[in-house]
Image (cartoon, rainbow, N blue to C red; front, side, top):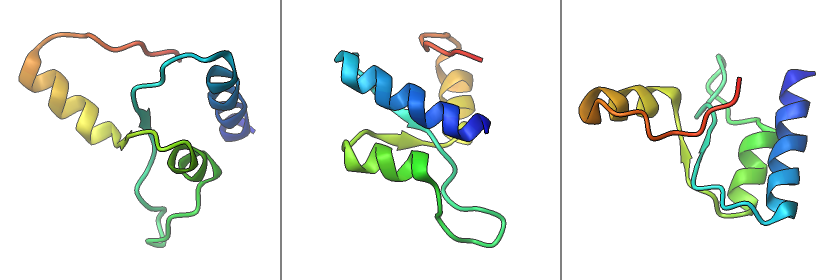
Length: 71
């Protein structure tokens, strides 16, 4: 259910014309397959995709929080 809400939110932001600079999505599931509607939607709109590891590495390197996160 939560994943569906994320997809709806991403589509809503795009429809509103909000500049989405990147999305965080897993590269694969526990079986090694990429099967994510969210990731597929991001790829369809040619949005950059990064992992949570990328976010933490960026924060550790820059020591700044210049991210717009919503939990």
